[in-house]
Each structure stands twice: as C-alpha cells, then as structure tokens.
Amino acid sequence: MAQKGYECRSPGSDASGECYVAPVRFALVAPLIVFAACATEAARPGRLTARPRAQVSGAGERGELPIGSGEKRDGRIYVPKQARDKYPLMLLLHGATGAGERIERRLQSLADDFGFIIVAPDSRDYTWDVTRGSLGPDVAFIDKTLQNVFARYPVDASHVAIAGFSDGASYALTIGVINGDLFTHVIAFSPGFIATRYGYGRPAMFISHGKSDEILPVERTQKMLVPGLRQNGYRVTYRQFDGPHTIQPEVAREACGWWLNGASPRDAAE
Image (cartoon, rainbow, N blue to C red; front, side, top):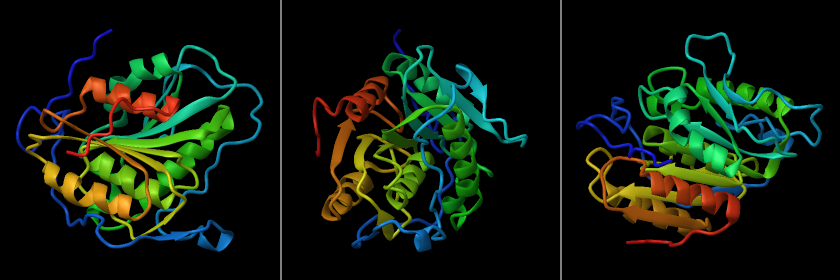
C-alpha cells in the first residue's frame, strides 16, 4: 500500500509536526578514536551492554506492543506478522517532542514487508539527552528496553540497525558510532550532527537529506557529516532527494533494502 509522505507542516517543526529545538551541537569534522570493545570500556558515556542472545526459548507476542516500562513516556515495539527463526531488528528514534508510537507506525508496513522488529522508545524528555547536554537517561532506557527485547525474541545479530529522523537521526549517528559493535547498520533521515569523538566498530551508514530542508540545512550533511564519516573509514551511502525536512517513503524503503539485502540502487553524493 502506498505510504503518505512525511512532510514538514511548518517551519520549526519536523515531519510529524514535532517542534524542532536548536541545541548546542557539532558535526563530525575531526578524526574519531575507534576502540576495540573490552570490559573496561563499558562505562564510557553512551555505551550499551544489551546484546542479542544465542538462544531464546520461544518467542514473544507479535503485532504492536507497548515497551512496558510503566513510565508515562514509554514507546512501542512492533513484531511483524510472519514468524522467523531470527528477526532483524531496528531501533527507531523519533524527532524532537515526538513519540515512538508515531514513527513506528510510519515504518510498520516496511517491517511487515521485510520481516524486521521495530523498537521505538520515547525519549525521557522532549528530545534525546545528548541534544540537551549529555548522554545519560535515554541511553539507560534504551539499554534496558533492548535487554528485554533480546530476552523475548530471537534477533539476528548480523542485522541490528539504529535509525532515526531529525534529532532522532543525529542521536542514531551518535549512539550508532559509539556502539558499532552492536549496531551493524546506521540509518539517518535528515540528521544535523554527531556528538561523539570516539566509537567502536565500523557500522555501515545510510544517510538521506532533502535539498530544500528548511529545518536542518542539507549543506551540513553534504559537506561535513558525510565527508567526515568517510574520512574516518565508514562506508556511507548518501541519498539526497528533492524535498523538505521529511522521510520520503521510497527513501525509507531503499534504506531497508540496503540494510537487509546489501544493495542500494544509487549512492548519490551530490
């Protein structure tokens, strides 16, 4: 079924009508320090300890489910209709003032088509912690959520992605680089920055941005983020499209195919 485009409705809002807040931030321009993972590095800011399990007894419910944290801001999990021996998993992050439920529902049909689990937490505050100053409460919530999901569902450790839109895309790049030994792929729809100077592993990257983005200028992504990542040894597929601050449905589908099938019809670096 055709999906509606996720267009920004007004200046100062993201594609969900969510408020965009301009924080202190920086783009990746300096060399990253990439570590080999070891026990002594687990306490570094932004590090996640959750990992897919080799064996899971049975499988949890399918369909759209609450994360079940018991907190006011919770989030959603979506498990596709078809059962699988092991599921690819996407951690999906919303934009500022958003909610996991809204962004999860936008990619729900793709989860059914491609057969992957979506985990879409709510940020602890109006946006993700690093945008408000430092890594902390959102990292802890995400880690606990992933631990619970990995305990309930068999997850394919070779296809664990972190994705996001707007502020969520910036957070996906940041957490994805810091945890490249967990996330095999990073998908960033219209990001604005990366807030780390160290990382683990070398996850593959898919980044998209609209040429007429009125919220986060495309030039930052085109001239700083993408070249900076490539200079630091990351494989980046960059998709620049005609449009505003948005996730275009065809770009989202392309990103999922790139993640799960290892191919993308183009690598545009305009």
